[in-house]
Image (cartoon, rainbow, N blue to C red; front, side, top):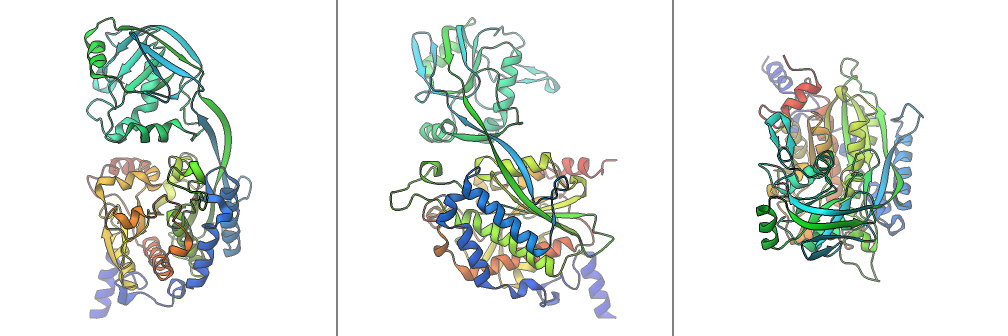
Length: 508
């Protein structure tokens, strides 16, 4: 009777015979027999020089996509794309380069693109007129805020504060980019530039946004007027703020240089073993792209080594995703599984963003996103979970780690805002409970920095025993989540709770 009561209690917390504390887990499950050498072989291939850093849109990235698809086919997964019976989802991208020439004149001073001016969006343009200050250049009717309400900017060049009213954080600056350009254009402006005040070097910012970059062809990022950032002397800013009619000026730009480029997400579907739960899906994700070669990588390189192989980031996670896929094919969990390797993470989470906007399995049936990604590891006795404490699956994570003698580091390096920097966030904003499962990391120290986005991130430097154990924990944790009697959901008060209620029809 006591044993029966204990089992009922475990089940009530989403823990069953295969998914309770480490002592109750069935150790005949496939993840307990992972072969380190097989995992190493996948890692060595995905992070090989042959794949040239797997940059989105490159041949190496396509080779990786084909390899992942071949594995899913061999495991017996159904193609994710019913429209063409393939394992691929085309992600339409465009490559954007800075204008050949652009400059802005304010009063008697001229600012040239690539120096104190950075044009990051917009067509060819010529304008001569006043330069005016428009506070944040923000329009929000719901909060009765309109910085253009009493300001005539027709045909004029607008300078604004960075970010949005009440939030000038880095995230707010990036979040407001597209909207601010559209708001200025709607008000009739000839161009708009935000003051650069972010707390990192202007040179790094220019390298990040001023070089070649990729966007999705449908994300609206092709502004209809020139848009960018500028560094101005304090005296010039003060003059703009105090001059009602603005200062005389002119703007010219040859326009952004744009070409279309495609890339692909890769995925497969495995039907769950429990007919009552099989119409619910756990979405497992990892990005398989990295940053490429030479100057594409954005870090130091030499003639001896110019390939950013990305063993830790994120061949490590891709191998984990494939390991889980194979284990589930051998012994399916109760809910259905979508395995999705996404492209374009390193250039703005674009592959996962596209899937979230164009899901191949309805998001209403997708009950959890279990993403695996990381900058590396500095603690091989643990795994790290970014989003711990937010979706109710902590017992499953802890049970899986315990089964393999590991501890769990909850939400490392909070100052880095990691939850919003990996693919999980694109599903979270849609209301889907999501988190990122990462190698053991206590913080961004020298051990992490030695390899993160460096040419030194090669497969021969990876601890293969730890890779095996990480794959085992990730797989078992996913299985326990997929076998829960109840679906995960956001904790009360989480910033994504309301989106979750909207997604799953939980609003009263």
